[in-house]
Structure formats: C-alpha cells, structure tokens
Length: 343
Ligand code: PHE
Image (tube, rainbow, N blue to C red; front, side, top):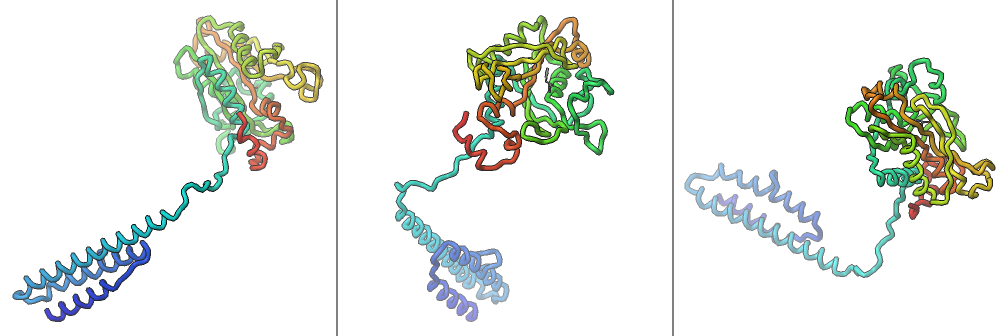
C-alpha cells in the first residue's frame, strides 16, 4: 500500500512540473497518462495486489489521482488553445491574400456549351451515350449494314478483344439509343467525343467532338429542319450571316444536305478560312431515313424526323483563331490559360 502511495506521489510531481508548448505535446501527455495503454490505466490495475482491508482507501486515492491527471490535461489543452488565439490575433487580416490561379474552361467545352445552350432554348434536351459502341448502334441500325460502301466514309477503330465493338465514329449512336427507348416525341441534342482512324495533322485528328441533334414527331418536315438551323446560325454567328443548303448523301438520312454559312471571317469576300469560296461548311443534316425509324421500332408511316450533326473543333478554331487542331489535346497550360475569360 505504501509503495502505491509513493508511486502516486512521484507521478504527481512529474505531472505538476510538466509544461506543453504546443498541441502535439498535449496529445503526447494524453497518450502517456490517459491513453488506453497509459499510466493511469496501469496503476489502476494494481488494485488487485492491495489487501482487502486497504481496498477502500486505495480506491479513493486512485480515483483522486485520475481526476488530478484529467484536470492537468484540461489545463494544458486550454493554455495551448489560448496560445493559438493569441497567435492569430497577430495576423493582419486586412492584408491581401495570396493569388489563387484561376482555372479556365477548355475551348472545346466553351464551344460545346454555346451550341448546346442555343438548342436548349428551342426545347432540345441533352442526351449522352457510350464512346465504346457495338456495330449495331454505330452502323447497322443507321442503315449501314455490313459491307455497305458508306462504312468507308468513316475510318473506324475496332476493339481487339471483340470484333463487334468499336470506338464510335459519330454521336449518331446516341440517336439510336434514344429512339430505342420507345418514348416519342424526341427532341434531343447529343454532344460527345468521337474517333476516326485518320492521320493526325494540323487539320485533322484521330478523335474530335461533335454535337448531333434529333427531332422525331408526327408531321416533322424539312421546313422544320431549316427553321431550326436558321435559328441556330443566327444565334451562333449573327443575323447577317447567309445560309445555303447543298444536296449531300448520308445513309441514315433521306434527303440529306450539307449546310454552309457565309464566311464570318471575311464576310463572304474570300479568305484563307473559306478557301476563297466565301462559304464555310458547318454541318450535315437530313430527314431521318425510314429504315432507321423501322430499325428502332418507330412506325415510319406515322412519324418523321430530322437529324443534323456538326463538329465542334472547326468552329472553335475559327472563333478563337486556332490554327492547329492538335493544340486542343496537348493540354499545354500556356494555350489553355488564354481562355480564362473567354465565353
Ligand atoms: N453523323 C454524321 C457525321 O458524323 C453527321 C450527320 C448527323 C449527318 C445527322 C446527317 C444527320 O458525319
């Protein structure tokens, strides 16, 4: 019993003289004395060696000791906390802060958002789909059966593990996925990344971005297509820009057309951007082919629709004066930070 009392006296001396100068030392104190493997626990364990007649007194002493340690810990904690506040009161909060570098949106994102928001105002919803696609959604359902010569219009990357898989060559796969959902009418815009096995150069890349649109309902006509695209062009390039449609061919639309706008760089007089023609081609479009509708279980006798598709990189290059498409994917901060304040 005497031994126990002596030990506690010693501990008390040690604890009383202990000073902590930071939070870390306070925590060390807590672990040493009050932790689950700490001294207080250990000394409590000595109760079992105390003779029955001393048990009551020993219990009292040990409890007092525990309280003593806990009080000291609270004291230490309080004094370091108040040191912290004293320290922070020396900070001059009126000084300007450190500069945080401002991030910027990627020019492709800026252009995509612009295009998408124009169609959203016409009531088009945004739809997205997979970049690794099966043959049905990228080709067959779009009226491009196996061995169709038009498959060669878009050089395709196939996935080695499964000959049925490929990297989508256009976002038209999302059109099929939306039509298969069996919910009509459809008024959707589909932005996304697409892949084509082309030699990388200043003007073409093996991946790029597109926005496609799809509108399916009863009585949709080519006039609706034209009005929708006129609205888009005026919002995008200004009301003075002229528009022309040229007949074209896409397997999934009939009739098909390509749409040009008068060159917004030279105003139609002829420059390098429009290759002296005064016109810039911006998208492909047409009335959805009846075979495509049937492939998605939509009755072509009752429903008609239009679709269109455009690249994002080319208009972004024209708008921001970018002369090399590879810059978009190199992620050079010196290039990207120039768009900090662009819209
Ligand atoms: N999918 C076509 C392409 O990638 C674009 C397009 C979409 C054309 C819809 C007509 C209708 O070139």
